[in-house]
Image 1: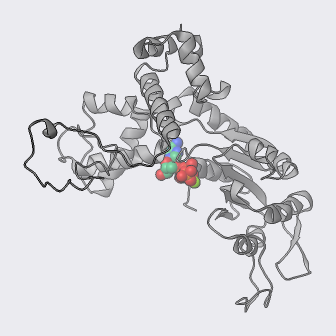
Image 2 (image 1 turned 90 degrees about the vertical axis):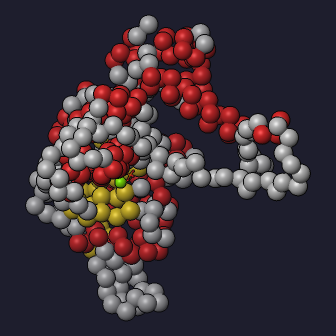
Image 3 (image 1 turned 60 degrees about the vertical axis):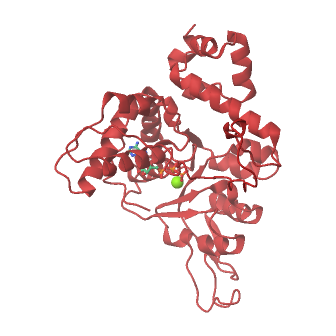
Length: 350
Ligand SMILES: Nc1ncnc2c1ncn2[C@@H]1O[C@H](COP(=O)(O)OP(=O)(O)OP(=O)(O)O)[C@@H](O)[C@H]1O
Ligand SMILES: [Mg+2]
């Protein structure tokens, strides 16, 4: 895990300051914490912050991505194994619970953990003890667990894919990170921060900043990949720009190209008539018609919300819908802001 003692967390929006306050409050307690957020919202840096603000700051902080290893490897990664526990286990191996003793263990993508590993984890949280794979010796370990997920854990638990009793124990407190689209005020700050970082990497003399039009594009975009996407977009914009000129060109999709996904041109057997030169859109069939329409509707709703700063009446007007029709569309696609992350202006705006 990167060393986040030096990592500056940028952001002044109300939603982000709320998160920082919650982090400061819960950090000193040696209790498990869950961090929930969309991809790229900063789960890993918040986990580091929790560790470095705790009394365990001078002890080890270890990280495992539960989605990256198959069940048996994850089990031995976390709990270790004895020599001969399985083919290839020639020597005893200390797992992360042993090595992080006194410190913090960050379990990323915790929803991917199999039910068997969940059971073992439950026991460590409950009694602070476990056995290495293939061993009988009881090992004690004092580790603070921070879990991260970008899925709805209570729903997974309700469906039987995640243990309810484990969820109860892990969720002493839950920090839900706001998506970047609910941190509008932070976008310019973060853009300058990432831009400056790239300028330093490129060893350029100074950071010229962005044109008005570039700033506007940045604040209108919906940022599905959140801070990581913003970082990439800004770094790309900086390195492609002239060192001494305001940055104007923002490329959101690096895959965009006139040559992308071109259908093979039809083989011409006869000379083309003038009507056949009209442009037609090509689609890949078979397709999931309902899913395509749904995705398109969500895209339109999100774009309209963005452009109208989440003002629902203006968004409805822009889409030619009544306010109630818009609300029902937003409800249908779960696009209504959840209480915690809702910018004040959204709910009250009429
Ligand atoms: N508040 C912040 N200020 C500055 N940079 C940040 C902040 N939060 C996150 N970042 C940067 O944004 C990027 C994404 O953060 P991070 O890896 O913590 O997100 P994540 O939620 O763990 O992503 P994923 O779901 O993809 O694992 C990283 O480069 C991180 O350094
Ligand atoms: Mg992460």
